[in-house]
Image 1 (spheres, rainbow, N blue to C red):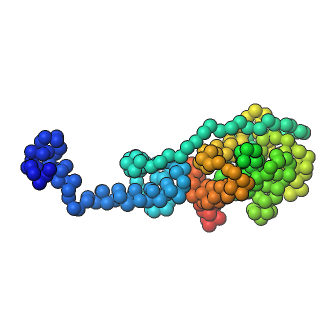
Image 2: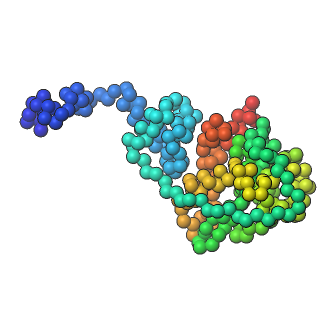
Image 3: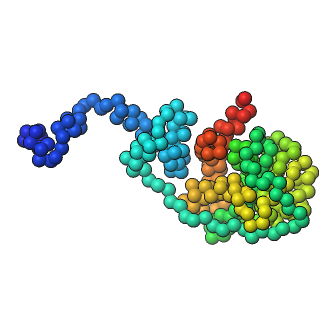
Length: 279
């Protein structure tokens, strides 16, 4: 139509400013438009690498860390909105296990979740995941300094062996530390004589959440929440191998090395630990 009628007339009839029209057909985009296009590309790279797990606030932190680009959260949000990025699906979390108490269970941690260095406090818990119509149990151990998952293991059975095997993995991986506080709920796996002896033999101190107080182990509860929201609830697992691959990709390929954590000033767990050991 612009070749059949005067531009002035077309703009008046369509209620469009002439400056907007000429800007639209300009061959030279503005510096802001070029910068926004580059930002969209970087945002898409981060968003894809995280498998749609990160929102505007955390993507803004990764733009700073990975690309050195300091932009506002609002700008990132507007760009993401203009890109119409697909959102991940989620469902509500499942309930926790019933607990069984054996012996004395003291809460030594008392919700002090910010130790001053690695290998001072480890926290652990177990959750369950549906695989091929049955439940598989996942035990994790997190070092509270950087919220890093230092060991995890799955089993078809929820027993003391699962906890001991996961602990042995963490203990070896962290080079056999001593005088570490090990915190968990009061599940029978953790209060068992066999597991308590395992900790005593290597010089660990055991701490337990108070009965009916999941917030006493909030760091691990929070990890499970986001693991399910960002990975497990988005997939259907037909075999142990599929689940193990998904856990490895999420924990080792995303959570520990790339996922910004608010407790780490939005550094990933690996980034915070590396800063500690390099200082």
